[in-house]
Length: 449
Image 1 (cartoon, rainbow, N blue to C red):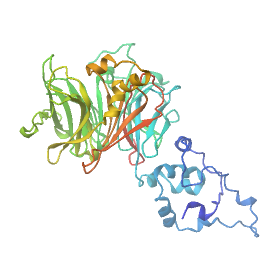
Image 2 (cartoon, rainbow, N blue to C red):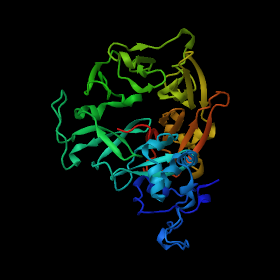
Image 3 (cartoon, rainbow, N blue to C red):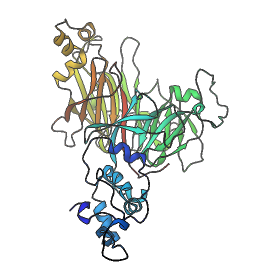
Image 4 (tube, one colour):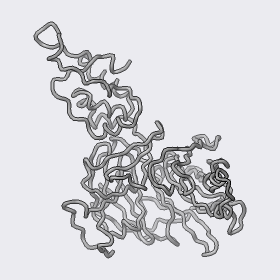
């Protein structure tokens, strides 16, 4: 059964204009279950009904509960496309109704911004195509940079000087100059087209801070020495917490299932790195940092070069990704990329995935050199191949300078028996040097700023 089985919808008034969200969904060249390309339904006054008053369209004869039951079977993307079809659909597919549908997972690119500004590139891994998310129709700031996300919410650093009437920033402990325009942290829902500015921060936090977003609107900004926390249900201002860590935290993540922050710290020497894992409960940001270590782990942190943390699927796992050392020598080259997984329930590590050799050779430059008939690149021979790692919630993407126009993608295996799913993602827009960064957004209507 499809929506077309009920015939054209009666339109007693001109339907509301199609929202911008529906326009960028419709331009993605995919097939939807609802009618989006056919001509608009005829007005009842132009239909020969054989009586003075027009008969209602068959779909109007459905009880409201039956219509909602049909629409609840749509994916979020298709439901949004149905909204501008008629006034009946627009009123039924309200924000409250759309909040009942599962969220739509997207990969948001942090760099580069597409030409023209005012939008971001996003990748739909389920349908394997790229989207351009417009922000100009609801966000009055032309300069912005996405930094983090939680369910349905996207967090951006916005340049408030680009607004006609920027909000005044109070004095902070950090100096500000014209070289660093004032920035504020904003939270928005790009699907609903709403946003809100969080309490002001100094420009140094925007330049050096790492933003983490958690459930319930909780936001953290971490620097080398301190962390700021903000909760909508709290006092309405940023709370400062000193970081009791031995050094700068690397790749901090927020594990929502454990309600805790995890970070790596290099406690070694300038000549040899020695990584340790630290964690802190969200409820104890002041004085709650402690090392996470077990004797059974052995040398789990010694086998990876340049490790990075990402949240695993479900918020109850921590992924650690890095180059697999070919030996324990200081300058030992890497043989591939290894993904380790920490189960926070059992506190045990296991191997979640290993990049296939043919795929890893593309990041070292060997594939390009072989195609051109050249010798092995010097960097590849020395093992100094930097691979950018980003993603979240059990999905990991890899980019590198020697891999142009595509990503390597890995998806976590729930059972842990197959090593996950590896694949190439082609058609990446922009950025000639091949280096990208990004994160996962579960877009939807489940939270509104």
